[in-house]
Length: 273
Image 1 (tube, rainbow, N blue to C red):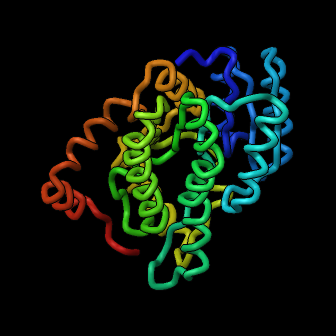
Image 2 (cartoon, one colour):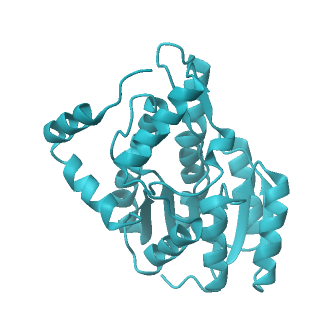
Image 3 (cartoon, rainbow, N blue to C red):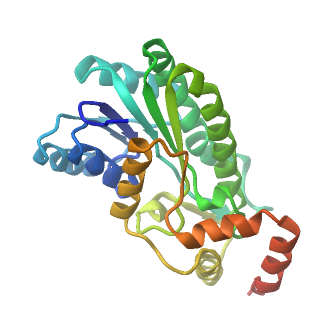
């Protein structure tokens, strides 16, 4: 897909992977619609897009609210034109002691991570189907392909849902001429932890759990700009699964044998402090 001249809508677009992807699309000639709840960061990223000579629309949007995403779709097409690229990227982290996490917290996590994607599909897909043109990128996670820790169960299960939804979406959309990509980044230097929730965990346990997750993924963190370029490349070259490095690919292959993988994880798990 040639992104030049397309309108790209990116939720969670004010910072991190969303910002990096927006700038990558803009550098390749796309106009950009940024959606986020952080209006201060939205303004800064919008200025960066304008500096690249592209049109930009920045809107405050809570993706857990269907009405917000419906307005986003209407405003994007009214002000910038038909949307050719949708990146459902907004997400949050919820982790902790499962016996202490409330149903309200579970609903908060799934409302953003899962229904944020559902709301994006619901608002934008009919327009793409009508035109027979478009590309959708859903941001999953390595945690949606491999359960990295026990304490991350709410986040992990929400991202597993996104992975399954995106696989089915790709199969559904292909006959309509619409492409789909699934982004599953591992460790990335973003501000995701700022909005995250940790329930029933001591500071020591939070540090230990983070280190375990990092170790399972190879112990390295990518820069958002690297992920943004991967997203752009996936759309341009019609690639479905987007992983950030060879270690991630090897981890997914290893996970394919669940018995072997779980035996390895149990052997490498840390003791509860």
